[in-house]
Length: 315
Image 1 (cartoon, rainbow, N blue to C red):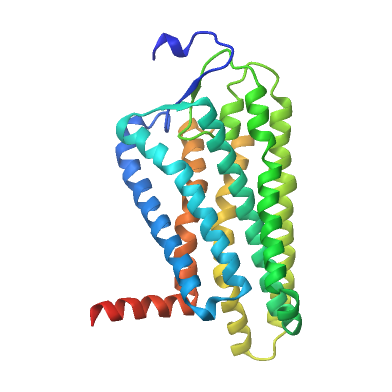
Image 2 (cartoon, one colour):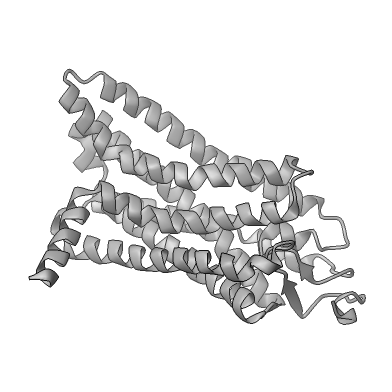
């Protein structure tokens, strides 16, 4: 490590991203996995967007929310993976201070947006199953646009404090981030001043934003499951379950890694650092890869469109 990274400074012009500390020898192999996940995420989400645009039967509120989810996943993937891969492949560890704060903002704001989109999709399924007669009059195109705008604005506004708090903090010890990207807590922990405000605001975001989203989703699905199991026939119950199974799978793929990371980060003090960083990468990389697969497999219109596409190419 060069001495320039250890000397005192008021604020750094660049940060040094270590990748996954302790697993440097495995960076090349890990990068192959990450690159595969990145390619699947980019291709899969573009396919979702293309099919929703081209298939008239998908011009419904649920699939407009799915398009928003695909766009969010694309931004999350493209704002992090290129830098991670350049670090692993070319040892390009430096990142400009402002670029680091920008990456941090994009990651966390779009994560909040994704959580909000899942909440909107849960509301969509709630209306479709619990109040089917009011579905078309409640979830109009105008209402979907308003919900989408609210989700985007919430993600933009609530994360504005992250780069502001990080920029105001004095960095006088080191500019080395033991992480593969500019994660908020990993950056503010480098500050030599009091970071209690930054820490408390991070906890607020976890419990009062994502936590409330999870509560809303859980309440929605309790009502949905009650309505499903009160249906008179088994076929009707299976059909209703099928309409929300893909959404449930996507929710679990998104929230389980996030919850696990939050718990290990706050309470797993004896957990090795490389495990923390790996989990942080998992909760960032896995949902954008899995979401198009889940919806592609579980959505009949998308599945049929894919089959027609490959059938026409084969003839």
